[in-house]
Amino acid sequence: MQWYCGVTAAKQPGDEVDRERERVAAIGDDASGWRRWGPYLSDRSWGTVREDYSEDGDAWSYLTYDKARAKAYRWGEDGIGGICDRYQLLCFAPTFWNEQDPHLKERLFGVNPAEGNHGEDVKEYYFHVDNTPSHSYMCLLYKYPQAAFPYKNLIEENQRRQGQGPEYELVDTGIFDDNRYFDITIEYAKGTTEDLAIRITAHNRGPDAAPLHILPTLWFRNTWGWGATPERAPQIRRADRGDVLGLLADDEHAGRDPNMPAAYSLGMRWLYGPPATISTPASLLFTDNETNGERAYGPGNTSRSAFTKDAFHRAICEREPNAIRTDLQGTKAALHYDYEVPAGGSVTLHLRLTDGNRTDPLADVDAIIDARKAEADAFYANLAPATASADERLVQRQALAGLLWTKQSYLFDVARWLDGDNPTLPPPTRRRARNEHWRHLNSMRIMSMPDKWEYPWFAAWDLAFQCVPFALVDPRFAKDQLWMLLFEQFQHP
Image (cartoon, rainbow, N blue to C red; front, side):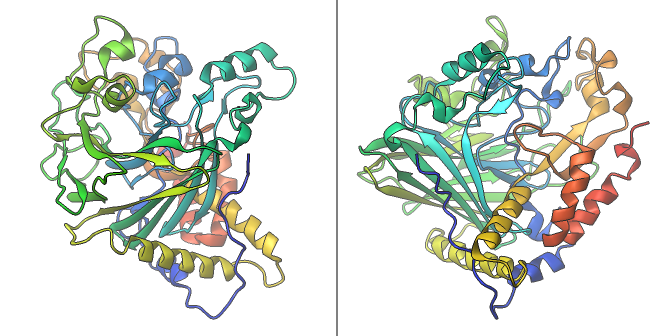
């Protein structure tokens, strides 16, 4: 396997105007402007304490990787290289399928503490290639095998080692032999604060042509279905025309998230992609971000909606055509592209997530991305010490990219979590659960996570020391993070 991460040599400082530094200096808050949209989607929400409503507090067993396909999250979404707005009302992330896996690749797989040789551990390969503090340009590389992903083998072999010897990693399974995998580069660039150009490039590193389904997926976090009386849900509907496939996400008439202290909405947002061609079939898929009761909890359990979170998996992988909505609307939707990627070749998918109904929206996607990438080069060229070598500059830039990619929208109302949303159906042992002394915490913050897969939660010690390198690229964000820790709700009684 090639470990190339898609990063070019670091640029030396020059006389270019540092547009990124100007943007960072002008940022006033996270709710609007250049930081409103960012990489705030978690890498993992399954197996977390926030999503645990079990009687025994076993978060990993309550919501497993397999159940995550079917159960709507209460407090936060996840995805591969995904983005969302500051309050995570609307989310975007690509989904993949190689026609060999038993399910769509919507989220990153890993072993839990009972399965891992040395505890929980993500078993995927992805690289934080680039990011700017305003998130005007972001790039992530994901390595997706072409053979069936060895979920069972990874669990069983790590368990067999019983804490002895090295971890059993994905590369150890032989799945990357003969370079039979895709290098998938996911890039985002902001044309304006509310206009995002997206480019997904998949390189077939193997010796043979291979199928690859790419589903750019747009969905609303479920904020409407938890109380005794459900709120009115937002809606995503068809908005394509002859020259593009399109989705329109609209929350203008949705009920207000009861957790929000003030009114907040995004209005209308369009996601555009290319139309189908003879060589690349394409279609629109719709469902609802609702729990599949039977698949999440077992036979006899009902679902609030006939169309559920796992519908695309069931429609594509299990050939269940009635799983998706035929009225072309819902709270979760995707553009589905079916590629055949030639050996040693690549395919590129251009998309646009924007606040306007644009004419020819894909025409300048490359230009926007290339411009923001050049501005990122200028920003980092001026950041490193003048005596730094090209390799040292590259190491610094990628390290800071990793830091910027691990920002997350951390939503957690502990009082509501302890008591339950529906007053007639409180979780059985909530009042004696962990975090019972944190009832005063109601976080709706963008926070620096230790790691968005392994430690996707509020960790004051890690956050504090991460502010040291953050101060190098975004001193205001670093100060705000430290200031936040002094608020009464983030203080343990």
